[in-house]
Image 1: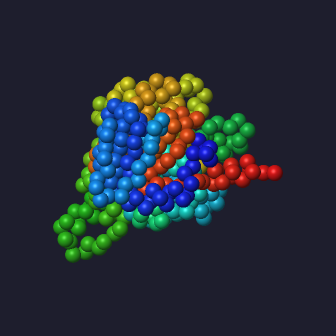
Image 2: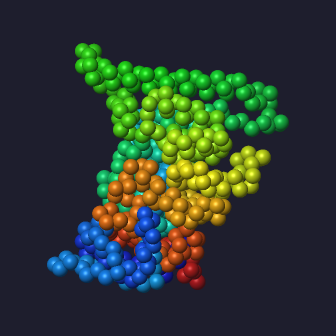
Image 3: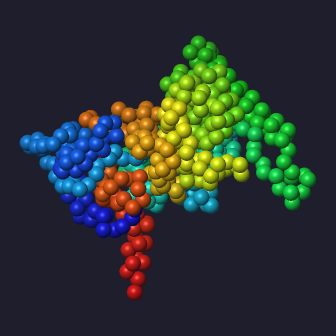
Length: 434
């Protein structure tokens, strides 16, 4: 998706920017996602907002509007990655360049937004595949977003992938509280390992039960703190960790609980209901019979990679590929998160693989656009092409879920975004090699 012939020259970008975030696309095929496709239509954007869509639109008098001929092209809403570290991690093997996974088990007060590096090389590479916004996870790790240390990693933030500063990139600094639900650590048997390092199920189970007790105790302490604050007790003192828990306890801030397997999902649901919090399940990969429970209770789900191989040796070869289709048939609303950094650019292909294995194409598009916006509470402004919404748009020469499709233009808040990246620079460099 990185052919340089489709990159907008920077001089052209300046012309677009001079139009005060106001654009008029003509003769294009518009894919609202929230409704049927519209062929040979015009789309008007005024001051960064979608103003009108129809067959014939005349720019308002007295308004400078950049007119773009979109004949033969397709206009889609920008895609949303529902779980990544793009912008807060540069080189995975160098800890100093990765600003997530802070020390400590309970860090509800932490927000990754303020750690975003707008100059990260991963940002333009991710944008190049049509991704205009991402959910930053404060405690990213292996296995569907699990951090090895923190149980409560912090508050996930939603950002645009464009801006001079993190303040300009912000969409919502507190979208959800990230919790890694404790599980029995998976330790594959190694026949060559020494007896002292052999798997110990009882020890792993005890560690998990201890973590669950500490998690519940933390919620109890947060409730006691909230009550003391409301009662204005004389010995009450502000505590930032418990302050961050108040919106969660008031059900104003949802909880993203990372739990992948059937038993862990069952326990995570029971925990969330016991604590009476709004919640979303993340990193789901082996839901089993809990699929019916998730559907019945209308619990939103964030799925991880469909491009990974089967996790267990007795899994069907297409277990990861077909799971989204199975969830859709059961009536579960879900979106995709890449739960990584360097492969965040593959977000559209996560959905594409699911479409190949049973997920309807329109649902594949929704899973990286409107569904994600609805799950994270930003659908009033993002996720589809509808009047009044922010103009986060991508213009392509085909289906964005297809690898061979080229991204020709991108607009974030109505502003044209330069599609040059480290990949395109290297492409041009080596193509010009003597």
